Image (cartoon, rainbow, N blue to C red; front, top):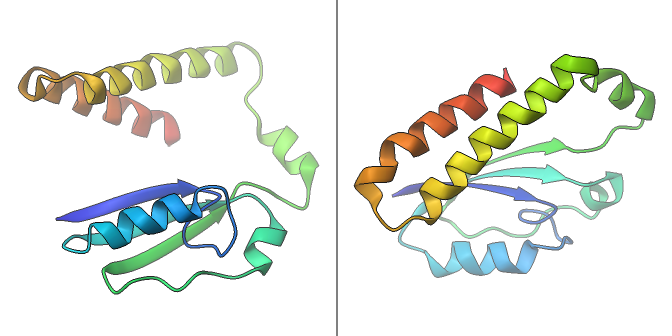
Length: 125
């Protein structure tokens, strides 16, 4: 099975809050292949480098959650009605996704999971 692992401030970086947990997860599930999508918290974390990864990790993609230019972040933030509407839609889709993951009945929740995931993907465009 191929697993996409999305991390924030953890694997594959040497330091980070969730690094050990992610490392145990990946090494403990050695029979699976992993692609890691990592969000870094700052320059310092990236400067420390990456940890050695096990062979079942195929691809690592990273993206910063920070910028040197804080003004660029403030300018990119949604404002006004569109911002509130987008946040409300995100909350609705995320709640539906969480409910689909947490419920025990897979068959009944499969469509809701897919709909919620597609809704979040649409908001990300």
